[in-house]
Amino acid sequence: MFDIANTIKEISILALPFLLAITCHEASHGFAAYLLGDPTAKQAGRLTLNPIKHLDPLGTLALVLTRMIGWAKPVPVNPMYFKNPQRDMMIVALAGPAANMALAVMFSIVVKVILSLDVNSLSPLMLKVLEPSVMIANAGVIINLALCFFNLLPIPPLDGSKIIAGFLPRETAFKFMSFRYGFVIVILLAMLGLLGRIISPAMGFFYNFLVH
Image 1 (cartoon, rainbow, N blue to C red):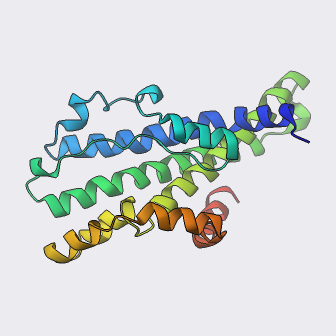
Image 2: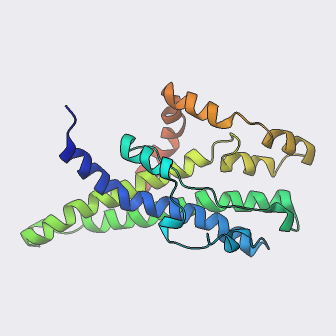
Image 3: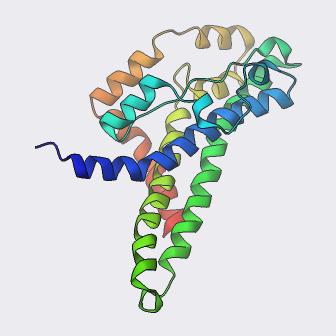
């Protein structure tokens, strides 16, 4: 049977790290583009850490239903403003996963600090506070690693494809990025259970490195 209480608990644990992960991911794209001369994200009001500006209704609903998958509205970027569009787009694309990796590191520090505490010296109230805190922090590590490595997949229009395109000859990069069925491939990989298998090795390695 559908366990409403358990579902609410799971969502409450995932909500904060998920919102922080997608907000910092998208804002980092915008800030990187702005620093490289593109004001598009700023003009659209997307250079902010306000999650409401970045939330996608369908992506948020997907998180509520699956407690695993969710996404935000992509930050608008206009490469026409860049001095070197191919190179600068690669930098902008890399900014999002880099932000998620930085968040994963910060959340892992929180996990380590909490787990290092002497539980025998803590009050019952403090223990009640720390238990959900460590669960949220641990979820923050996992969510940010998942978002980082998912977006690094070299499938257009994910960030990984733009990074790969930065190393390709211009015409080849244009043809590569013109591929329109990337999300179809991602959905198929997810339905076949292959998406998790692809990113799990990298996630597991970095999770063990950061938390253990």
